[in-house]
Length: 470
Ligand code: C2O
Ligand code: CU
Image (cartoon, rainbow, N blue to C red; front, side, top):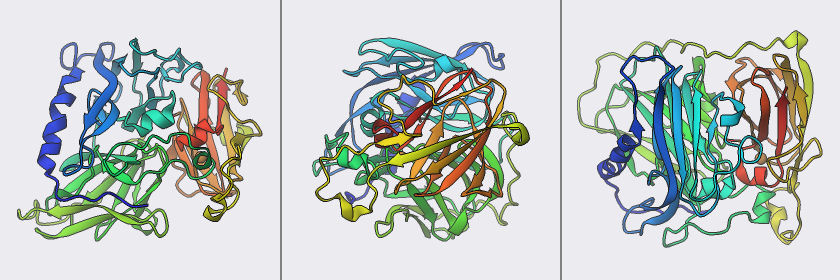
């Protein structure tokens, strides 16, 4: 695996390129301070585009994107607001949009055949829902998602707290992963059977907000709130911020007691998010490298944070941040919870060495013995509305799986049978090979909800089920 490197990039031109599109997509309605009954209106046009991902001297790349940008226009609202989002499909194939992590009503969840008819080419669909919880979320297609996300369709959905954390800058990094040929075009090899049964279609080029980054300017002494969104179809990131002490304040949009991640490394499987506070403690003119060390022997430098020569923004470091106010999920009642198990099986059983000569085998994936062949499935589990549920997820495979549940956030209460200390609320939990995680939640959102791996090739390969809340 190699990354395309290229000479310097002018970050200013990158920012200028997307700013007008972001503004054009937002049509606030109603007067300021209006009540939640008035919806904020947005438009997302899914269409082909041609953008510079790698930068000169490489040519532009043909992508699929929202509002002519990668990532798509950022949607930024306040907690409790109502959104009305018109999605216009100008692609040549059907699509849907899923609001990952947001607890929307089932009919707004964007799952083809299960919650809505796919939006055919040339058609429109209006999504409308309230955002009950603050946090960092994102949106992406749920139809042919391995290819549609892999070609560029995704965007950030930021829900601001009523009472936020004081920071100098709020910065969103949508992390993308691309498999590019030498001419910077997207390699057209989606759905490769062998990759489906292994780590998924991991690319060779990583972008931040749709560009291969070179350097990002920072100022000495400033405090950043860095919202990391892993929008890759298969790549897992393990980001180290050399010389800095990243402090996690939220995972998957949900506040945690501010803490440093183990070994200072922020691990994010596909679809996972982290809000990281970064105090830029270096000196003017210094550099802090951000390095991705997740895959052993394949670590690479993602970007350099380069301190400007301005004097530090403040003389003394800031106090540690307070914890963000909790969101609105009800607390699961563990003593009276329904207990269920989801066992993940399938995939190649060996390591990388086994891949040779096995290309023809149709080894898929399954949950509790069932391999999904489409979204419109009979439920694997039916929960009574308002009941608490503890779901023990067992990964009996040789691969990592970021497992996502729609319509709910859940607490991770145990790993490998051991209670977790932090009991984080997540919507996507990364489970290492042959490990397990127990999740707990209140089944308070009625409907049929997807439960699947967010390595999108695994999902396509059958690692998907439906949990019904009736
Ligand atoms: Cu991010 Cu089922 O999706
Ligand atoms: Cu998986």
